[in-house]
Length: 74
Length: 318
Image (cartoon, rainbow over all chains, first blue to last red; front, side, top):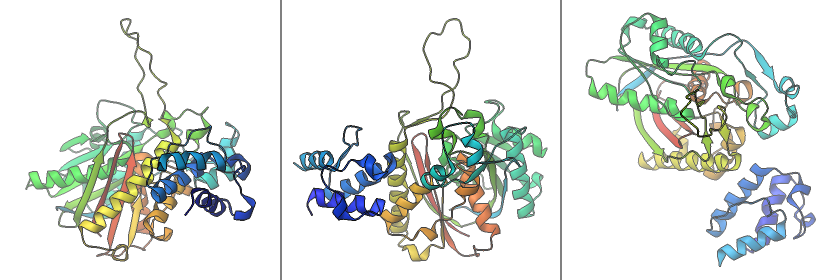
């Protein structure tokens, strides 16, 4: 599964939002999720893609997280 | 291994503090705390120290077991919020019970009750004459909370839990993992007033990195439960209840999701008491036992995680 597609799927599930309403520009803050939601998502991404991911404040949109995860996958 | 649990007891102070009450002190609200932590209310002591709460929980456990204090061969206790470093919490409780026996504390923060059980198992093995051991976790967490820090003060509560153990064969297996470090969770002591010491120290309250704690806790629970099941050739269907440390409902829910276990398998009472650290597992165990939902012969898993970092789980036949 593509990284961005997976991130959107996880966010849609966590926030009860339609996946079609989330895109690369969507900011996590706009979805009303908190730091533990992001940690949950990071752990699921680690498992899915076999990476170690540290969530930092500057990773604040779907697009930025996608870039970070893709870079970690190499 | 070497014991069975023949009685449980708990004690919480009478003062109920709701989320709305806390919202008067710090910038928070009931909806956020209920949804994000899972706590609706907690008890805060107004005039009882941890040892006094621990004594009451111990007396309740002894009464439940039908055991007299003088029948106890050893008392093991745990706390991170006791009123004294010395005497130990176990000695304070022993004094309250008016008995003379081996008594000592074990320090492992929120996981301590599991470490008390492991210690008891070792002592039963070492001292063939020991027949009964009392274990107690007791906390006045309100004494080490920073009530200006909304990220921690809404999580914790005060209370005590205890169990009476009798030599037996129902402590079936345990896993313990310790990874030393103070960057994720720590509770510093004050520096004292030495005129010679000049190092700065953090404030003497609970300091916790929320995201790292969450990640550590979920990983610890998941791994420990998986290991116990695998080692004992069991599936989750063989387990009647999992009694986890009541740290945060979201930790328990996410661990359940990762393990593919229904949430209802985890006994939770965090909504009533918050996180009572070393007292949380024995308080939950006592409530579960008294609820009638636990039958003799049921296999249960207790699991906990916390400062140290230390985490543990054990498999018990009730």
